[in-house]
Length: 167
Image (cartoon, rainbow, N blue to C red; front, side, top):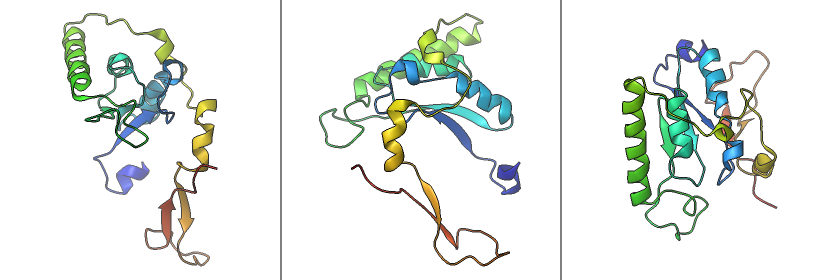
């Protein structure tokens, strides 16, 4: 309701596990079904941080994802936090082919098997492997000016920042 009142009807919520790379047993794709139930008028998708080419994206598609986000790189040896697990151009091509093949199967009414490990539970939770990220990667809303009692909170008096860095 808040999103619609704000006038933004071009938004998509993506389920994501922030561990890089995310092990398949922490993907927890059933959370997307919870999101679909709780946000019936919002498009739901999946942001994949697994090292596998297409296991989780295909499973997400089978479970109703409307968008798949996946990190890509030109070279897995590049510096940075994402390159080592991101898809190279050939892997990206493979993933897209598998997604398109799955879309065809689903449109023909075929059942597409899904690795049950990827599905997890319907409850969104922070995995133990993600805890370290809370210290530096999660965004926090802070005040940027003094906010008086009764004053409307807006983009003019708050900022969204990451709290810090790894120790």
